[in-house]
Length: 199
Image: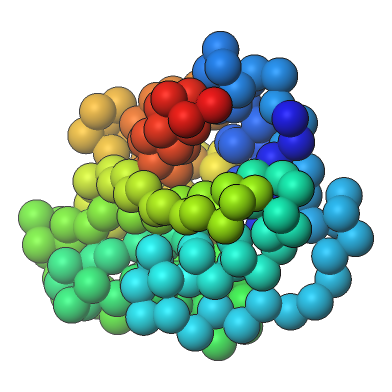
């Protein structure tokens, strides 16, 4: 069975493929990207929640033949009232400019002590089945935003996102460790459980 993942983000694609491969019922699924299906249209993510945006993307690529999945994920910082939230990828204006986004995040947290820099990664995954039915799942990962980046791995805000589980940033742990605790890892396992029961 092929599953269409409504993303061009290679980091996300790798994570989805790895978790599907590790789930017995889904290990035979081929995860197709937007490039694989020749989808080039812009999808306007105008939802106000991660769930709404994920559903918009999944419905945009649903073709009635395959399962379509999409995630919308981001960072919520308590001291910033939940920002950047659904604007995480374009926090500094341009889409996916990690360096600019991280600079703005640190600027907006200037003067905030570490104990008040609590934050969480949130991932909502929407699934649209071939019959048109849809559902969403959500995963979160709690942490704190450091004053300086650490680590070479990951993407997005990972160098600044400190996780208590490992005592390191998300950019300083292995992909396997990240999948075990990450917001997307948790959401994908919830998705995998739900799909396993339905298939």
